[in-house]
Length: 328
Image 1 (cartoon, rainbow, N blue to C red):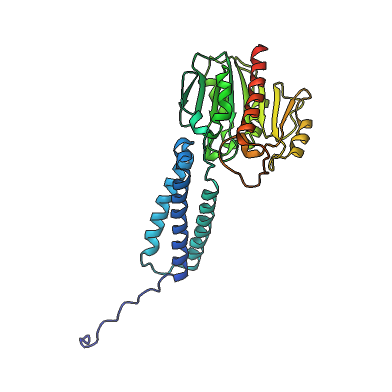
Image 2 (cartoon, one colour; image 1 turned 120 degrees about the horizontal axis):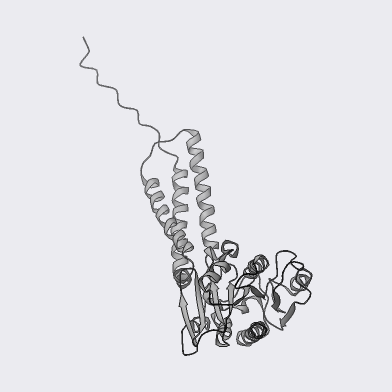
């Protein structure tokens, strides 16, 4: 007969998860929330007007951070060693993701680029999730320019320097790259040519990393109904030797005070480009003066004004595109 006087044994309470693991998780969660808030507060215009990929990552990161924070705040029993190791790996991966998200924050377009995005009697402006277009209000002459922005640079930052090309009668299409990385936008030229079948010939160009991608696109382009007639490089150079395969005319515009695409690198690129390529050096110009997005880490110190540099860069670009258009 059971002894009714003996109380039942208390259930054994499993040990809680290590406090350090919960604290580390909350630190990463807080970092993720802060980075999302910082990116939205400081680069909202670029997030809204850029390729949607970065905005999607911000939303997913915020949702993931909230979920991870809720789970971390709940009392949870300790897990076996291998599961705890898995949580540590996820924690390290989450921290790396937050750092990457912060690094991907775009350089935001500033004036006069924003003003150049407004349409008027000379130039119409249209925008979609993957590109914006500056077109002559009276219709183009059949020669169009497709432009690849520099790495992590708001596509709108090139509106002021490229608008004179549209004012000269040529349609300008500026690509919005996923996450602001040109290598993720390879093929965008073909998309632009398909979207604007009325254009008879194309000039493909780009700034910095965008120019490197533009050189790849120009070298790979076929001789179809809208061939690539020219390659326009802004403070840029090809990734490899295209001197024997590239049939398009080449104009390289660079700055003598560029700290990233340095004069030495531009000079070395001569061997990788066709022998008849032309090189224009804007004396006193720096890397960030090829667009309007503020200073860039690692750049040189310019000795001319941004307005002066922009005017010279635009003049060289317009002369190049005009020459190709008149040669048809």
